[in-house]
Image 1 (cartoon, rainbow, N blue to C red):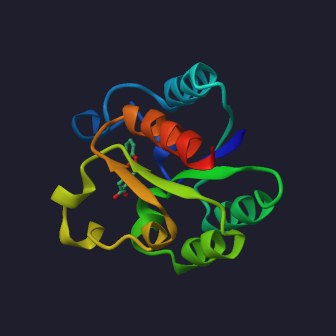
Image 2: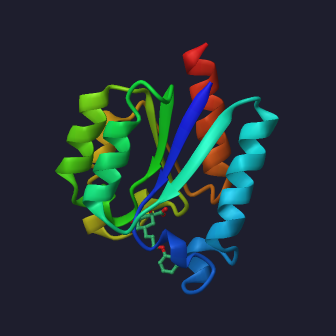
Image 3: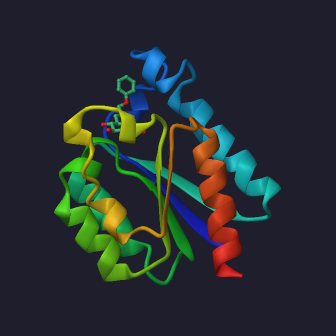
Length: 143
Ligand code: CA2
């Protein structure tokens, strides 16, 4: 089983600013954590991060026929991107939304999730652990 793990804009800045919201560990540590979690679950996972909406859309489209599922933290594009929603719908792969912070308890403008409309499940506020939960969920779902 092969999963694509997508991270959106500014997540490459993890550990550099806003440690109270996003933690102190950096993006490389997140990738290590995801790869380790996938290995423990006997799943293959490829991680990709971009600050660009269209690049994320391209990656989702290219996932068709290659991956069994998508774990996505669209970051700020969560709340704005109909293009990412449409891409997820277009490929129709099982997808899970992850957020490091507890988005549902944050600002009003973060309360809409377009990508979430095409996702089977959401993990929020669990920090890195949300990605492991998403991998576990997709492994069980795809059985
Ligand atoms: O909680 C999450 O994972 C978010 O997807 C993170 C996004 C935010 O726009 C979403 O509402 C919730 C922001 C990612 C920015 O990450 C930073 C990391 C370090 C310093 C500044 C931003």
